[in-house]
Image (cartoon, rainbow, N blue to C red):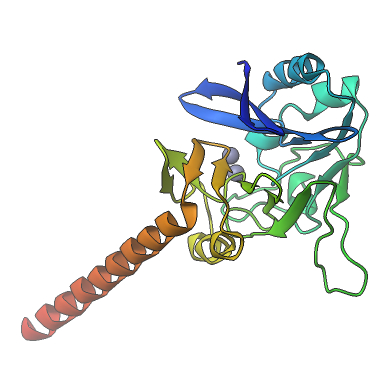
Length: 242
Ligand SMILES: [Zn+2]
Ligand SMILES: [Zn+2]
């Protein structure tokens, strides 16, 4: 469960349990920002990694969304470092259990109330999210209602939670996604930012992600076209058989 250097200012901590679960530690001039917290047992490894980095205190925790495999380590980390924890305002009622996540029949509390704060927005700019030190958050709903990705402009790395999954450097549409079309539209952020490296929680690094997204969109178009043709053919057969 050790740490791994991703770029000059970003390290990651991963756990493999059938799939990879990854979080990121970003070095700021005066401390560290943690993005996501993995599942419960990862809390201790993350604390150890922060100590090993010896790069100043933990300053804040930024969450991509509220699913259990992204908020599980929170309590252990907060016991050691009582820092502010941010999530998109649209995600908080789902994470705190006031609303059921789309696709789930009942609401469940993943984070106790009083911990989560909404990501700060720019005054007068209709919900546009404020940059926090070296990281710019972008709203990317679909996998969850308030999913957010964080762009490290200096290193050109997009820390993208479950915007995608990945396998051996290939993009895979994210699993457990109730609104895949909206998630795919949110993925347009890859064209906008054109990161050198996309980092996802489940599957690690993807290089040239914008070009790989184009391939994925083309596959999606072909699959939809084929499904429509099959439907039309079935419709004709049904008519002919009448
Ligand atoms: Zn998720
Ligand atoms: Zn996940």
